[in-house]
Image 1: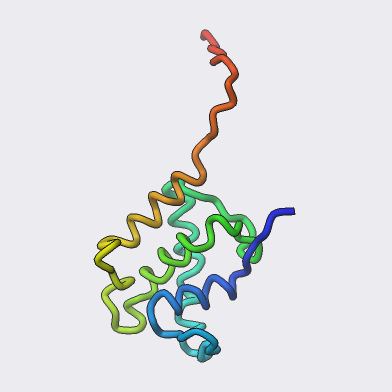
Image 2: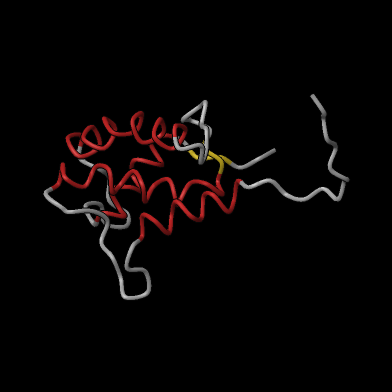
Amino acid sequence: MAVTKTRSDLINQALANLGVLAAGQTADTEDFDAVNDHVEQTLAGLDADEIVTITDDDAIPNEWFQPISVILADDAAMEFGLPGVPASQADPNPVETARALLRTRTRGKPNGQPLQIDYF
């Protein structure tokens, strides 16, 4: 059985990524709702870009969770007067890093089978 995270986990992690929610704190209702309003558009954008498709936002695969929370945090940052997810010296563009990580984690794995060609 795969380990998954919920929509609430995603929102709380996005708030933590923005520095709005400290470790061990509970999110204020207003902050939670501000990020919650961005979940559908963020997931729809990832689906439209053919990066990941999440059909149940209460069953987000654990391996996709952190990168999606970074992208969600960046999308909701303006709600908190922030320009985006804070960059660091080690990662000057965390959103692009998150998108690249999702692409890497969802790419097809080679199966060793010979390529079958269909002629028209």
